[in-house]
Image (tube, rainbow, N blue to C red; front, side, top):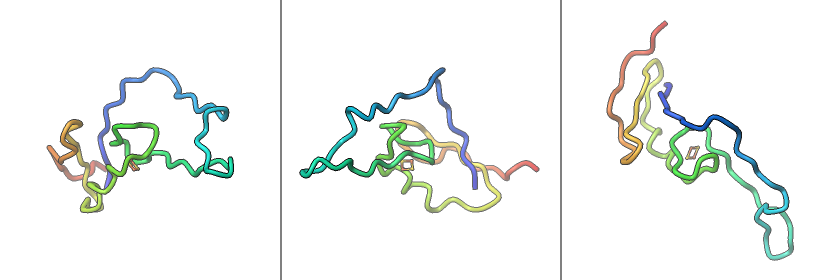
Length: 78
Ligand code: FES
């Protein structure tokens, strides 16, 4: 499985340790970084990756960025 993702940023996203979320004891909380490319809170995971669970090996998927639904699914080139 693979995904075609459109990203328009032309630079990095800064994650500043000074603003890192902390628990009640002041310890840094775990942050999850999006690896599926579909998160509305990119670069952080927002759970949208759950819509990728049905993807099949050997296929390339394209998603509607607003609805997070598959708009095309084609055999992987190669
Ligand atoms: S890994 Fe992308 S939304 Fe969770």
